[in-house]
Length: 141
Image (cartoon, rainbow, N blue to C red; front, top):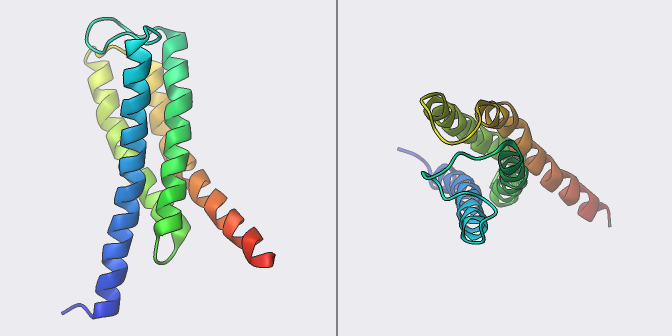
């Protein structure tokens, strides 16, 4: 049987990672949909993304991933950077699955999926590091 304190940490950890993941998803869907509505990005399933459109999407998606890592670290009951990295591992696995679909003929250039695979973990780790650095600076004051 798991002690109450350990159960609280497990639930808090799962909640922190879930909150970071949900932030990434909600922001990505909102911005992707808005840019598709205004014609900046093609509607998924109808046209292939150009390199510049993929670069734009990669830029803001990575900013959202860093924000998700920050949130996961901020809400973590223990080891904040570890929670950001755990979120990054989930992102890495999702990016690998996405790359498989790109290779099968999805609508993004091949480099886009590889960039997400390479950058998912370091970007969430960076978000966790930002939280840790901010926490350390605020404790000094």
